[in-house]
Image: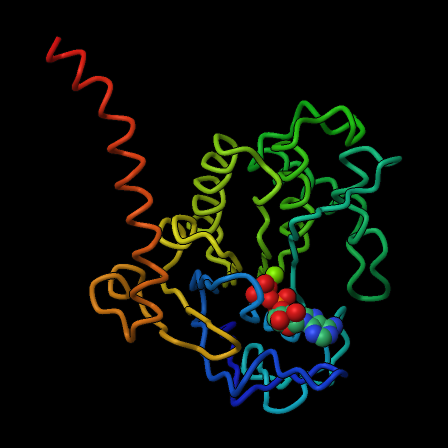
Length: 263
Ligand SMILES: Nc1ncnc2c1ncn2[C@@H]1O[C@H](COP(=O)(O)OP(=O)(O)O)[C@@H](O)[C@H]1O
Ligand SMILES: [Mg+2]
């Protein structure tokens, strides 16, 4: 069981700013949770505390029932994918994928054969078979993002963390990768926490969304429930603002063809 639990978690930065205020949140084993909210609401801070990249000011974070507050990042068994996925430019795709595995020491160290098998599996899952010997600069943006995802997955993380991983991609690729990420999750069943400010991403990916505003959790529910029964005015306006945009866009797109039909 790899659930994740935040209990009364606070983050106060050195300048005194409180970015996360008393977060209580449970992510179930195998769940795909999306942390959703406007820019600056504390999503990345929350994820970074879980990852061990940011100190937890107060409260408790557990992974699989184990308190991790004082565990170093490398000992938490997490995989991470960020917006700026920073592959090693001088290394082949294969070496980028296996770097973490090759650096492992002691009993965590896999045999060369086991590593080769993991590469094969990851490459097939992410359609990278033909690109393993290429350098990142020879790849498209989408392929690079796949390598970043593969690099996280190849270590079989207990929990997969993603922070706005698709923000640098164009709309078409974003759509494609979104489907791919959900498909991979359904295949692997890895507990996943995905940060985005994009309501559409949240709606299409999440089992449940946790909606944050100014460091405070506003609602934790399946996406449809949040739409149909928003917990408060913030959630209502945050989710519906976007719906209004969609309706507006749809109307704009439909208008010319309506005219043509009428002509
Ligand atoms: N190192 C820091 N020192 C002080 N304030 C910070 C620091 N990092 C982030 N913040 C502030 O904390 C708030 C939450 O930031 P962040 O978690 O990055 O938001 P999000 O990822 O939701 O956009 C923002 O107001 C941001 O300016
Ligand atoms: Mg952020």
